Length: 266
Image 1 (tube, rainbow, N blue to C red):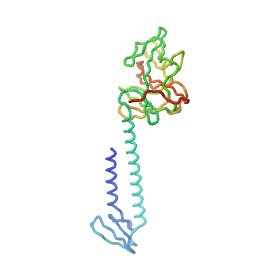
Image 2: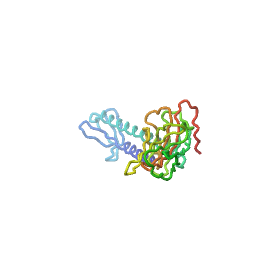
Image 3: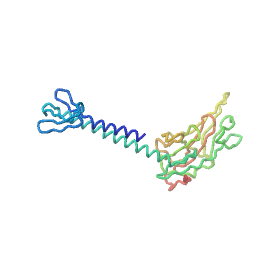
Image 4: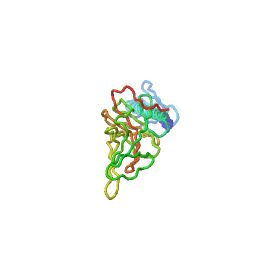
């Protein structure tokens, strides 16, 4: 893509170099390859007749000729800068993607390093007890209200930035995002579940964080909070609405933490 744009740019430059309008004061112009002022005359190479010709300087609108030539040159230079910037952005993006493992999961950008977040085990807590939530299949419909939880009130995986950046690689097209977890008596609540009467429709309530989403490649996205987050417990999640098949990669934002102990990616 970058080479094709560059080739088109070179063709444009060549076309510009081969076509200069030598304007006349009567409003007309000669299409020339080049020209030069010699005392009271202008000598130019006519593209129409493929030969050198001369014309009195008094008949030439030299100011208009020079102004337009400079404007066209400036436009080409600006386009060249844009092409260079776009090509650099494409190369940087390709290099960024190449560093991310192909394995589905969540990876944290920590400076020049990439760290793998460990996926948390989750459970569904109802009045009848707890059951492990399987990531690959929905759980049976629960009656009334329930919560999806992960063990421990604090994550061992720390981030020190209030706007942490993550890459999420999806095995299949699913919804994803960042949520805030609620600590509660030895667990953190991931989401609250409500089963609607009669229809048995499952409503999932999550404390969503507003994020930017940038698609880096097929099934690969870069996500980060729109606004700085408050210190606390969070998670990157992947889920399907109404299926209770949420996958959780937990982390804590602790600005005082020195390092983030997430596993380094291979």
